[in-house]
Image (cartoon, rainbow, N blue to C red; front, side):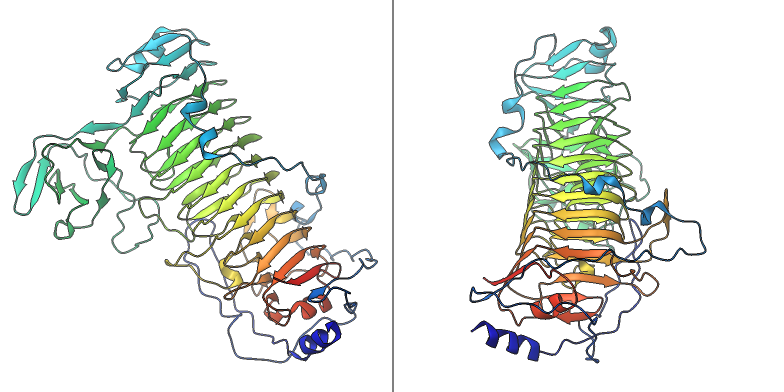
Amino acid sequence: MFVALIAVALAVVTVAYPVITHHKNAASADKSRDTAQNGPAGPAVLPSKHPTAQPSKVPGTVSSKPPTVAPSKKVAPSKKPASTATKAEPSTETPPSKAEPVIGETAAGPAVAGPCSGVVIKPGQNAQSVVNSQPAGSTLCFASGVHRISQTIRPKANMTIASSARAVLTGSVPLTSWAKSGARWVTRGTLPSAYGMSGQCEDNKANICHLREQVFVDGTHLTRVASLAGVKAGTFYADYAGNAIYLGSNPAGHAVEMSKTATAIESNQPGVTVRGLTIEHFASPAQAGALVSGPGWTVKANEVRWNKSVGLMLVKANNARIDRNLVHHNGQLGLGQYSSLKANVTRNVITYNNTDGFWIADWESGGMKSTRSSGTVSSNLIRSNKGVGMWADVADDGRVISSNKIVSNAADGIRYEISRNGVIENNTITGNGFGTGRGSGTSLWDGGGINVNTSSNVTIRNNTVSGNVNGVSIQSRTRGDGPWGRYLLRNVHVTGNTIGMTGGTQATGMVQNSGAEVPAGQLTFSANTYLLDKLAAQRFAKFGTKLTAIGWRSAGLDTAGTFKMN
């Protein structure tokens, strides 16, 4: 039976398509559509002198013993100074870590915060005044109730800002004095002056995602519209020139609030603990956080929700520990990390972020994004965010992404982009990448469950990757220079993973720009298990050539892998 399957598979002609130039800026350029997967048929192009697959005794399965692998040849140096991006780094050779259980939604947030014993802050008190009155190292405990924060709380070194009573810190103000205005209701005098745009919106014609003032009715987030004519039930329009807010439903008898204060807690003082708080309705600008961690902070068991831009942000927060937080329904991004080394993000639940329409496919919206940082992201649940699940971008160095459950995010499950020295291991990554907005697509240029983009020294091992728009997408693009030289796709190892591709156009493989060619031996696939709808399906691609399982192996990829019909 298997011999017949091989014969059928080898009879399928592998088709080469031209590779066209494809360039993507680090944060904001539109993704051009690459047609390398769908262009006109050309001659078969397969590397020669690769081992032939040996038949397995199990029907419907291709496997073989690992072949002897000769050392790869060194790449000849260019005339430019050598970049450390092309050198193997020890960090990618670290032994696999033990898979840890993913956090459950009931095991995070204020319910697991524990007690607080210290100076009590009651609703109505000015929290920053209490902070100012206490020495460094003090513990301040927010009492139960709603605390309206009109001034950012700036803790002193080693302070604890906590609550054991589910205190709510809100950045919103009540809106009153409503008047009927035709079929709408209006209040005046609460908006700031008009301000400039920052960020990129999914709707890049209306461009309203950057506007910071959200409106809530009885705690329900209203949808912003771009014009007075668009106002209907469940929406609002903010007229900054006229300093007026319009609703489409009668606000009488309802609590109407508008987010106003930019940030709840932020300080560059070290050693602060923030625990047990609910932080909501803060009007931070794009890429800024409602809760901003500093160096050596412990941010644990908080609920960070319904803030305008980033829920929880790390800025120059070396050695911070972010643990057991519920981070959900924030307007742009759940959690951001910038210029923060050795920060650990563990056991958090990061869900349903990007409620305010930032660009899903290719701007920093969704679950978590880090830049110029390092540390571990482990045992988190990252689910149903409108964007990338976990995105390491722009000079992350030494990032470990392990033991997370990353499910149903609109863009890639994990994206490792223009960074280096990464380990992606023991994650379960399912149902990601099916966003349909601008820049979304189904080719390997558009990503997959795991997407490595122009990065070096990356190991992808022991993950379960299934039901995503694609399996593992390895992309080489022209991306310019970074802090250690030219960004290049080099030394990427994909090993020991289970990769399911059973529907649609799902594929695993590599694509490259003209001008971003990858030397032989830099990308290896070994000992992976592939679950396929059929062995003859062309679910693999190597630089524009579509391949079946047999073709993938004949091209020298996963000669020790296993291919199964699911």
